[in-house]
Amino acid sequence: MNNIELEQKILEIISQDNYFDMVIMANEFEPEYKKSDFYKQTKKPLKEVIKEAKIYYSLQLKDLGKHLQQLINGLSVEKLSMVLDQMGTLFTQENNDIMNSLEVFKDLQD
Picture 1 (spheres, rainbow, N blue to C red):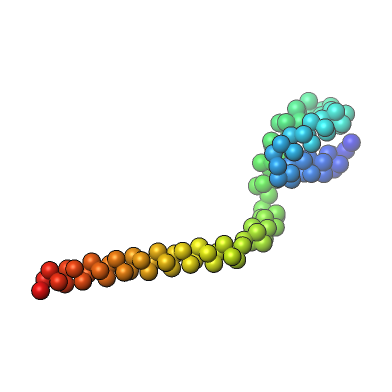
Picture 2 (cartoon, rainbow, N blue to C red; picture 1 turned 30 degrees about the vertical axis):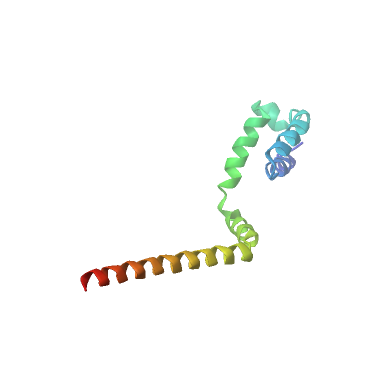
């Protein structure tokens, strides 16, 4: 297994959304990893490689646009609308409370 194939497999492992699935996938890959030239030269444990790779690839700016687009795609218009409605209701209630307080102060001045 060369470094390109190793990188592809590590990227596949760290792209798992479920942590437990990622651990299982890593455990299944470990025997093959230990046969790689990279492991033979570095003797780095697979868990350490995965941890470092996760950090390394999350800091890559070239993928920043892709990650931002995924976040944007994941936004729910319904949830956003609901939050805006709740904020509107809250502001309306606060405005009414302020107006009532002003009326009480006005009455006290008279």
